[in-house]
Length: 183
Image (cartoon, rainbow, N blue to C red):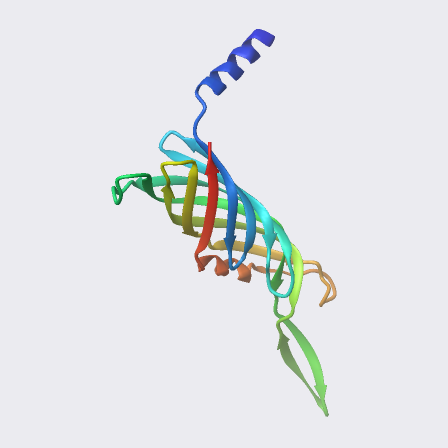
């Protein structure tokens, strides 16, 4: 059994694919980023701070990206256009809507408020980006990654928790810059 395990480990290390590690920085937060090449495509995993509405949180995301074009825009280095699906989860702050019944003389009326509230988030994402790999071990990329999912708040502003659309995930349409060391 140990011989089978050792041969599998040796086979995986002998076929090592390029990897990259660095930072992903944008309007929605900053993350530690890791890429692992699988043939022509790559897997990206990110974890870090999420700025959120009214407070910070933590978030982790993973995506499988397909490289659909490698334009020859320069003599040195390589370009790549990529896109792919992903998932994300975390404990973040999001804008939530509550209806409060107010009393105005003889009648009650609904009043909508939009406070920021922390809670658990789970979302599907789509990532589209452009990457440049220098002739030395540096990689720069610009991408967008919106999140479409739900947010369950911690119930701070209401009696009990509330589940709703993860509004802050749409901030992923703002481009994000990644800087990574390739090895």
